Length: 442
Image 1 (cartoon, one colour):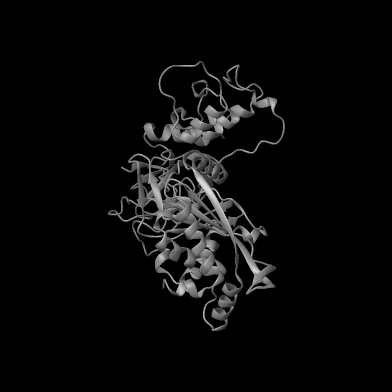
Image 2 (image 1 turned 90 degrees about the horizontal axis):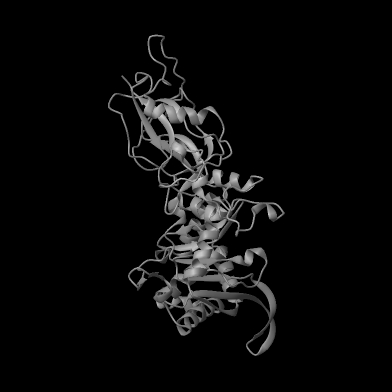
């Protein structure tokens, strides 16, 4: 007798509470192998193929493409043991795998086939009622607009803190909504539908009506929503300050040209700046730290996980180069190129976007000279680099045309004073102006 197993949306990474279904990779009735990807989802940080830890026959799917699900919501149900002669060996009953690249490794390619049960065998859809009923109901029709119900006491069926915040910011009483998720779970789409309704649901008289403001409304969700929340938190918690300096990058550009002319893989300007940053952080470790508010302590970190800003079609993301302090410019160039390509194709894993300790932001690629960056919480500092452009410059006592760049450092004033921040920035500028200075720390 097959056992019906329910596979729920797993935790896909640090701070992620929901994901949007982009594309189903299996259909009801398909045979799946253990750890076979069954759905492609988009989180606020990356596109991820989610593998199922069970092997058997898919009896139900939850959610249409484009639906946003909270972590812990059902994805599919699988009848383990049904069609076992076609799909899985008897000993393959489950796996701890939750992300592609982790967990059980199968060398064979999973086959996708639709099962046609014999007439004497119950159809897979006839699963036990506790599992099949809510899933089948959800799959029968698209998500409907929320319905106002009498306000009741007791807990509210909400998992996602982002959903609670969205409702709170717009004055919506969650107790007055009927959730479209499993067992009445209130999803972000329910709150957004309430905002679009002609008569807002349970909006207090003192709150401004959503319909009173005209113009296009773009939901602050997904990557944009996470970025907004993180930047807001940075502004709320971090007393930041910014210092900046212009530097003559002529010698740095000449050194790069000489390196690339010598043969071998090309060295990027970003890689040279990153190597300068790791050397500067070794001299000024205060800026490679984080503040533990609970313990009221500054934590200086023994490694440099260097984040760098990358613009993609989905928006700005910050991939992280692990242990950047151990890499030379050639290794840094290769890693920047690899992570940038993954970012552009939407294939960065959540682990590629978390754990940074310091960020390098090259906004000069946008043709601008300066900026006051917002610190990437919970880091303590960010170095901003403007465009490198020919400008008049006094060099060796004479006016000359030189390659000039503006460098800016935004830092958490709790971890150091201006003298330390100024010393860091001056050292970076000195290395840019005379790369030989860097040789002293190699």
